[in-house]
Image (cartoon, rainbow, N blue to C red; front, side):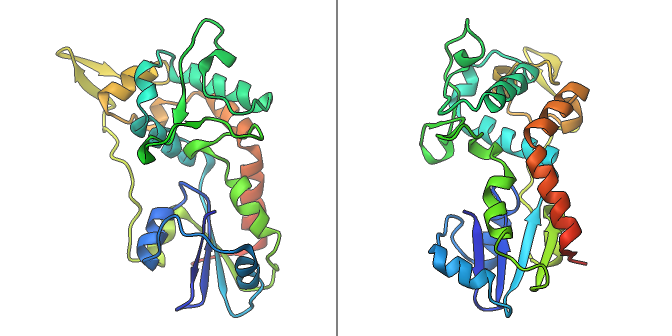
Length: 247
């Protein structure tokens, strides 16, 4: 969905995956995969007595959080000998061509026949793009999740926006951030190996280390991610300019 309704304090949290869903779920003691009827959601979003809180996140931070979530939980990455740079180009190709239900690298790398799936944390095997050609998994767009709810809200109707990194201001639960290796290295065959955007996904997966974002990005990768998530970026700017920030 995800949307979380707090009937005790008359609040509603609107957010997308990798934008604090675990934090809000723990804070409100609501199942993370809770589902509401659409009529119920619309009623709450139009209720002037309810405080609506939109949670947003920087597109780059969110992408890497989602990528590492998929990398950690899915065995297919053990067999992906492409670099992170190549992986991003693969995503760009899928995105630009609206390729539906992609689950193999061979749509872009003609000489490779490797599965690329997500859902391993739930013992599922799901495609990296959905039936509409949108990116899936934990790298799904924020736009697709929250835009339909934003369209229902009234600009003057008790709506606030907060960055995921600021959630501790209104909750007693801190974000469950991944542990990044400070020096982005590990011991491999008794020698130090450093990871960056030219490292193979299989090597990063086997190491169990999540390199810092700064090591995994270059100007080209940044431009690609901005292109892929441009609608997210535009929506975030719209939200910031339309609704008040939580102080």
